[in-house]
Picture 1 (tube, rainbow, N blue to C red):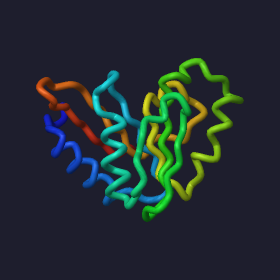
Picture 2 (cartoon, rainbow, N blue to C red):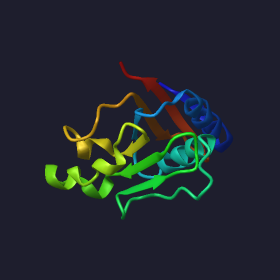
Picture 3 (tube, rainbow, N blue to C red):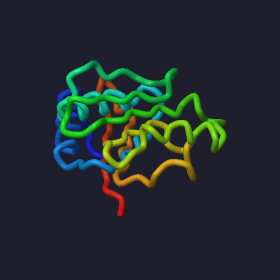
Picture 4 (cartoon, helix red, strand yellow):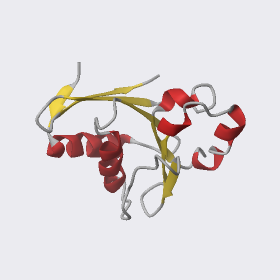
Length: 138
């Protein structure tokens, strides 16, 4: 399932999705470590007009970027696998409806995060390639 792409193909898929995104969209990114989740967000944010460097928020848990056609929130819940509902509530400023929200490792926030409008599944496909599957939800 999904299309196998190289780096340029991943950038093209991210840009195509970004062209369709609206404030309030919540994108869940699923895949093993190193499968390209942050890279996908980086390309999508650039296509949305974000000019500052997009980095993994693994240790900070969340970053917010402006300067594009909508604010972009980028959450990485990898280290948040055991967060309480109260701790997840601290992420509310990143989840407002004016933003386009990308969430890596969304299962850690299940029940506390807004429902996904798009789900992206990424997997290693060898030799610098990735398998990408993008689907709209609802």
